[in-house]
Image 1 (cartoon, rainbow, N blue to C red):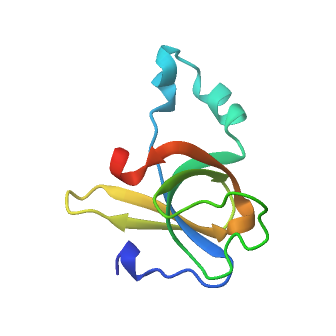
Image 2: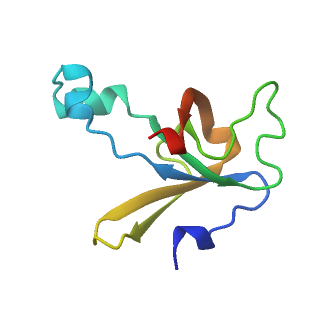
Length: 111
């Protein structure tokens, strides 16, 4: 099974969790416990796919496939898939209601 086999239903969305080196982001070193307190509830990732009812209750702009989004870190189900180089990529299957924001100007093909 691979990430392509996961098809969200209803209002669910499938997000690839971005692995960010938060310890050195912005050239400012922060202790791990400080980072965890700051980021306790949120994470960022790329919207991979969405169910038919995803974002139907949103007013205004809705996230598009391939866009970076901010979402609730501890919601939904976590999936891990092994890559060809034996590393792992994390994904989350969550309700679209748990997507908090769109990070504009960054698409998958830009990374």
